[in-house]
Amino acid sequence: MTKNPLIITLGDPNSIGPELLVRLFRQEPPQGKFLIIGPEKALLHYASGLSTPPFWARVDDPERLRAMPEGVCLWEPPQLSSFQFMPGGARIAGGQAAGLALENAVSLIQKGHAAGLVTLPINKAMFQEAGFNYEGHTEFLSEKAGLSQNEICMHLAGEKLRVSLLTTHPPLRRVPELISAARIVKCLELTADFIKRAFPEQANQPIAVCGLNPHAGESGRIGLEEIEIIAPAISQANSMGLPAAGPFPSDTIFHRAAQGEFAAVLAMYHDQGLPPLKLLHFHKAVNITLGLPFVRTSVDHGTAYDLVGKGLADLGSLRQAIAMARVLERHRI
View 1 (cartoon, rainbow, N blue to C red):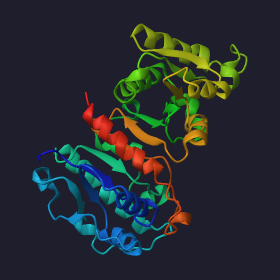
View 2: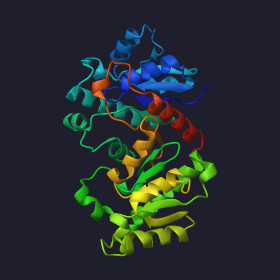
View 3: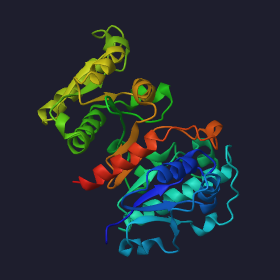
View 4: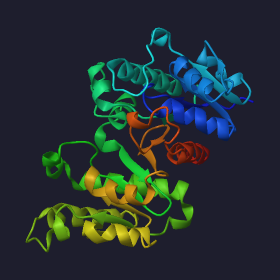
């Protein structure tokens, strides 16, 4: 077996991530090759609590994994050997561990030693306090890949509803200035490509584009972005052969998309697009970064410190994130 492994970063080791991974792989022994990056003591803690022997083999040289048989390996970067595991709380050490795992994961992928990446949750504030000056995973990964924010797109997928975000994590007051025709067309390109690979049965359905303003601007009475920017961008996308439609009022379009009328929705900002998706798919949605030169998926939830160690957190999003990474890795273009 020479296939490269799929990397799983533990994220903030004090968060719900390590517990979810141990519980999932205990219930459903993984098929394929995986490399976990993070402090081993976090996994040992939950494996011991579940009376489960370690399901991973510790390795010292992750660059040699390509020649190894299928299974789960763990690599602990040397800087994490002294990590103080304190589950259930936000600490700078957790942000540092998350950042180091990400840096090493990207390095291995770029060297050709891994097939893709699944990320467990980080605490963005602790991530930044530890010296990683990024708004989140998406921004970190795009920069490390040498891409601008205009070249990638944050997308969340559930069974009935799939949503791309034109903007990721800026303050709401900055959203209007970040909307451009070029950005809309790029997100539509990336979303259409994703649908073809992951949901080919819906490849010919249009992608619905939200308006920015209430009622999609009410013919210019509430705002002009729909007339001056969004509608021309949709026309440009259509001329390129991209199946896009809109702009639509966001208070109705998500219902229509969930009923199967559209393959996906392009929302203008984070809290326009994600509340409807999480209402429908809170435990089973997957976060995908479109446009990267490698596969990256993630759980769609946060650190859930309040649930750590209780065995109550749902495994669905992690299960789907791993499954989606496998699908996309098989259908890379």
